[in-house]
Image (cartoon, rainbow over all chains, first blue to last red; front, side):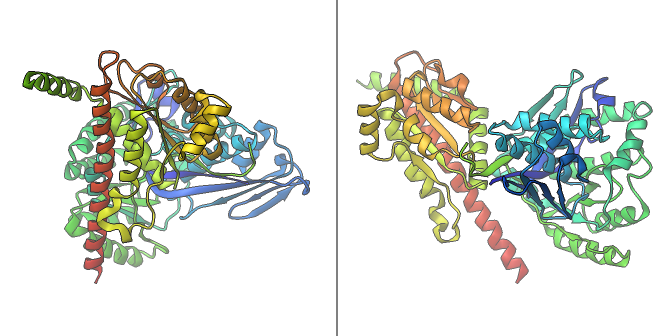
Amino acid sequence: MIVSSAPMRISFAGGGTDLAEFYTQYPGRVISTAIDKFIYIAINRAPFTDHVAVRYSISEEVSHPSQLQHTRVRAALLDLGIENNIEIASFAPIPAKTGLGSSSSFSVALMKGLSAYQGKRIDKREAAEAACRLEIDLVKEPIGKQDQYAAAFGGFNVLQFNPDGTVDVEPLLLDFKKRLGLERRLILFYLGLTRDASSVLTEQKANTAKNIETLKQMSDSVLVFKDAFLRGDFQGIGEMLMAGWNLKKKLASGVSNPVIDTLYDVAINRGAWGGKILGAGGGGCLMLLAPVESRDDIVEALTKAAAGEGLIGAREIPVALVQSGVETLVNSTGR
Amino acid sequence: MENFIEQFSQKSIEVLRKLPKAEIAKAMNILQAAFERDGRIYVVGNGGSLALATHWVADFNKTVFSHHLDEHVHRFQAIRLPSTEEELTAWANDVGFDMVFAGPLRNYLQDTDVLIAISSSGNSENIIRAVELARSQKVPVIGISGFSGGRLNPLSDAKILVPTQPGEYELVEGIHAIVLHIFTKYFKDYFDMLIELQNERKARAV
């Protein structure tokens, strides 16, 4: 049995600049941190079953991987030449499509686990590259590269996407006072509206040419965010998030909607410095920065407002920052 | 005599100013990640470096949590290798001194672990063997070296080099002790603050 894991992430700025349509013209940058919400993948060799079993929100048992509905597992198994006698199960602490990058965390943990299954240990960068190849080249998802790298490396990083396709990972060396200071001022509020990143990103990709100047500004703003984090200027970061959010809403029509705008205003009126919707937008999680003394009040007001809007399952998700990236937690194959 | 003391102190201060702060910070992030995944931290070194390793293990496993021992069920797991003289001499006598660290490490090492290698020259063959084993399993290596870092420094993920002239063991080992105490003090303060904030939250919830 092999158990691998990869964290989800919170992205503060630069989303969209990790798409090839942009970074081949100008270096893309994203600043993000891994959080204490992990995807786990368990892989078991099942020599006497003569099938491929994949268990996630549904359970699939097929005689050949090409028959799988799960696009990423199907593509990964076919690519690695694993045709039979394997069981794969995944576990997640929160629903999919919350904007925390969980689908790429899944891919990164999957590639790490499948490599171990084949007797090969891969490092963080190799896991990130394998997941990018799986999602972007093989499955042809219209997504960028930030989530795969954030999940594989863990910790708090500035990721730079170079025109030649390489990715630089620069860890932000924040001491524990700043990390805990940020955790105390960070609110992650799940809206209960799930979203499909692909539809918003497809529009965003199509608009890349039109939005190139905006995206350049967003990429450059990552460096300003970096300095603010190193200073521990959380109010400044909140205010920049607000400015960035207003900028992002211009990128694609589905980034916001009236319900999100209402909740955002509720938080600001209760004292939040600013925030954004995590992920490609259109729903998911509202991430806010707020003074320590206002946070309980903001969460209460958001919960009430979300109920008023009929959002089912909306709630605060407490988060802590983590250093862990992709890991093989268990490997009892003896290899 | 006082001059001699003054000169040694001055030299130590000069070297201290050159401490690779970013690499020490990276090392502490590696240790934090090992803590999060419940991994173990193996420490190896020869002679005085082994003494530093043993001292640090005691501090890191216990002193880090000493203000709140009961609140921390989950603690660091730092282990000096080899952990007994019997194991050390068995490997040295039967296989060779080059294998005194890599030999035992192979029994223990899992993908979730971390290796700290301490070597003033960075060239001790037995240390390099242990580092190569860790690297072959993609286990992160924190390399603590002196002089010009030898082979250890470039092989490490966190490259903590205390740069001196070759042979200045007294300077290097003293500053290695400081680096290891930075690790201890950082996490001690970290966990103190964490508990303080948890208690504050509990008080607010009441």
